[in-house]
Image 1: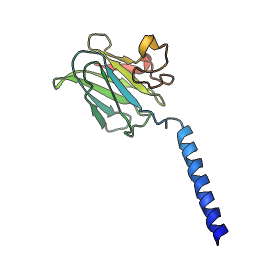
Image 2: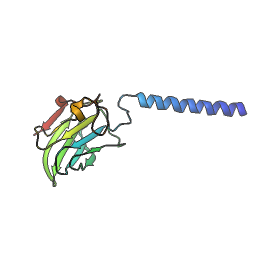
Image 3: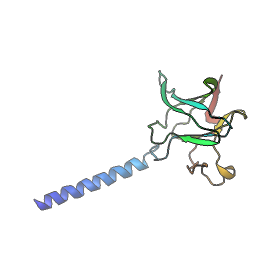
Length: 152
């Protein structure tokens, strides 16, 4: 009986470890957030993040990045393969909309209303030489500017 219980315990541990390894190595299952927005401006903004991949739009999150700060999706479940729309608002007034269609990539974005376009991929400190965002997230699988489209 003791041998059976020990065998079952070892089998359960092996199964748990195998599952953890499979989840961690699956594409798009990194434990880093899927979305980060770095507000490079000097005013707080509102950013509505909407999944527009299906027939119906689905609100995912509303971000309120303060001036010169980052907001990220943290542990929120966001499908890496979804086409996302980012609505940028200032004092409850819609400023612009962008779609990001970058399946399997992180969406680490910079937002600066003084630039055109105002939403673009983060490069990180030292023009990206460190390969990480200012908050330390890896840029190796990040969205490119060609995958970001302004919606008129």
